[in-house]
Image (cartoon, rainbow, N blue to C red):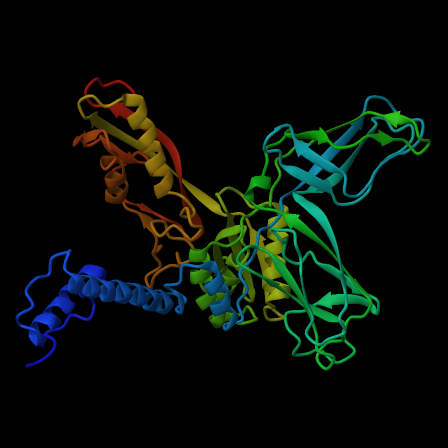
Length: 503
């Protein structure tokens, strides 16, 4: 007699399934054992084994899931897996803004605001703090008595460590979140330079590497005396922490200065500050889905930028970039040979700042070099405004204002640049809108897709079936997307079908 049924389902690994399988096994060996009540002592042993099996299979499934790039859910495991590919997930980026510092009257002596001066928003509980990146001087007798300096959403940190003199020494920085590339390291034997690895380091090269863990905590690692020089004496590490999308504050919000100020003669002065423009460039660290999407692409581009897709992939490696589209003469006859235009859309949409454009060009020409003879320019995206006009009938008892707000949110999500996890929105094509074989644009906004978005909003009973009851840009036709165009929600016109009035 077989101990197990011939058709065993090895996917049944939960407690109940294992308990039933064990009971079947018991019956096959001990036919007289028929009492499987909870109070039976033998049944307690059966359930104990089923419980242990449930726990063990859970750990096995979890290990199998976390050992693969596309199924892993824990950031720690993703960092380890992508390290095998030479991919390093990007951390948070700090927003920057030009700040205007003013005095009530021309000062009798120069007034210096020193590097590191803190400027924050007016909120008491959750103030966003910036620091001054360089000294700002208001000259004596200046009229108007103002000066402009650059603020960054970061805080300076300094940590001291004693060198052990041992190979591969590591020091972990206590402050988080660490801003990538901000570490300035020196020791008793001189200043050290950050490198990606020690493969090209000699025994005299003062190099260090930085590893950032899942908690955004940085660890500085030095060489072994053969590949990378050993530090001596006291190790000093200056770095910055902070960053994130929270730093993209509105204009006129950075108005609070910490500390008191004097002119060069020691006379007290009252300094006011404001930002005439919104801060930009702040971005959160790459999410798990973003890492899972970008890490496999990194194998394709490695450490260079050659093909059209290489430019798009390397641009999207920057956490501030949501979408990218590279066009050459192959896609657009109006572009000169051996040149290209790289269109980038920042996180959240809109127009990229000059700082972001410069960062993208640096990314695709220096960090991941392109061919020497190829010229690339980074430009603003071309948005196609999609006006939606529709007549909707509400369900009984539905609140008109709430339905209108829900429709606006649903359409906003449909036309969003990115999903909530930071990955590109799959409902809107961009970066692959090259022309097909007969010269037609490959992308389009389909009327039925937008129709379904509005129809599926809770509270909508139906959409009118008249010829003018659902229009995109004034027509009930699919909207073709030009090669350079990205769609954006334009004017939304909603008519209540029951009353004929605006919703």
